[in-house]
Length: 260
Image (tube, helix red, strand yellow):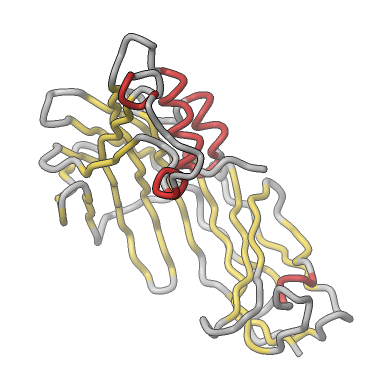
C-alpha cells in the first residue's frame, strides 16, 4: 500500500526524534508554478507551515494509547501542523504575497516556457528555504479529439500527446464532466507520450457502465510532483532547508469525450 504524504511525513518525523527529546518541529512547504491554458492563467502558490510532533517515547505519550481509546485511533499521530505567517516568499526574487496565514499566492505572472524558476522563502526566524524547477515546454493533446465518442466495454480510448521538453512526468486523467456522476474516473503519472485509458474509468464502484460526458486532461510537470509520499519519507522532497515539494507545471486545454 502506498504511503500518503501525511502518513509518510509523520512517520519520518517519528524516526527522527530521539528518545531524549519530547518534541521535534520542522518546516514543510508545498509550492507550484503553473501555466494553465483553459482558462489562461499564470500563477504561483506556496503553502508554508510548521509540523510539530511529540516523541512517542516521551513519558506522557507512553501512558497512552489504550487500545480501546477511539479518540487515539481517529488521530494516531501525536502531531500538529500550523500555518506560518509573515514569511518572505519570492519567485525569481519577485515577492509572492500572503493571502491568509501560511498561504502565499500570486497571479498574472509572466511565465515563459523552459525558463528556470527559483523559489526562496525566509521564515520569520531567519531560516532560508530554496528550491528550483523549469517550466515545461508547450505541448498539446493529439487524441482523443474534442467531441469523440466511445462505446463502454467495446471501444478502447487511446490518448496521444506531443512531447513537452523539460517535463519529467505527465499527469493524465479522465473524470466525469458531471461532478455528481458515480463513475470512478482514472489518473496516472507517466513518462511516455501515449496511454490507454482503462475501461474501469467509465464505470462505478460496482462495475456498472456510466454513460455521459468525460474530460480527458494532462499536465506536464517538472519537479516535486514526481515525488511520491515514500520519496518524501526517505529524502524529504526536493526543497532545500525544509521538507516538501516544488514543481512547475503546464496545463494544456483538455478535451471532452462522450461515453455511450
